[in-house]
Figure (cartoon, helix red, strand yellow):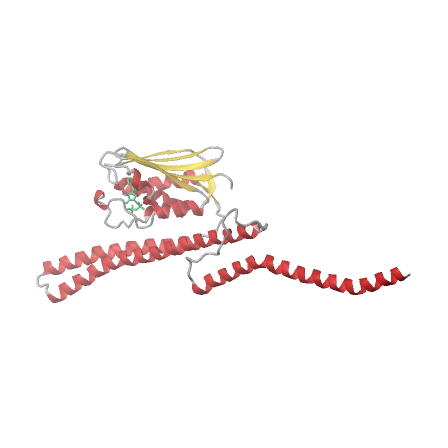
Length: 315
Ligand code: ADP
């Protein structure tokens, strides 16, 4: 009984001590394991408060962290990748706004200069006419740019819409080619090879815009007697809409850049580009993306180019 009594006495003060140690240990371990999450939280707050998108959450390089915190490290890396994308998107937007302002400033300055010249120095009807003609050309250019910028803004609004109604693509592409043919000079041949009865969920006006932009480009870089061919096909997996030409082609070093907004490979190669801004292909790429598809391009300088809108059939 003496032994039993001692054991009970011992356990009476030992149990609270063990419980206290366990609690403290638990607290320390929990606190330690939350530390990296707190670091992520702090870094994310700092980034959003300072609006400095170049900041990143500190991560441990591989092999350094042996304490089984891989999931938390992965979380930090995922956040950092998200910040990379946000920073890229933000910089692209900034660049776009600055390029657009620059492009708009040019025609506006020419308009202003012509007005001042006409008011101060123009004497004959001929002088006024010349100034007005230049003003007219430049306002056409400014309004062409504004309508393309508005189109981009509307495309951004469509970003969230992922369900389009089914349309008859064969009929849409056919009528797009017929309408476009009416506007072409007779020296340019626009051919079509359209497989019948191809349908897909799509926005018809956007598809026609994509088609027109590609035909416009082809027409700009071909010569008299050259031809532009529009092809619409489908396989079990995908639908493809191709516009090919046998014009000047694009050099390999320009191939990646042609999709960038405001990029024009070589303005001097094109005689009919006075109202071009290098926005057409980036619009085409955006329209393809909104439909869940992609653009492919290939070209041989001196032989021609080929642009294909590929729409996977997983709708
Ligand atoms: P834009 O047509 O307004 O110049 P785009 O974005 O449509 O702008 O095209 C970007 C550049 O890609 C053009 O400046 C041109 O150099 C090149 N390009 C596009 N399509 C063709 C084509 N079919 N043949 C040759 N070059 C092309």
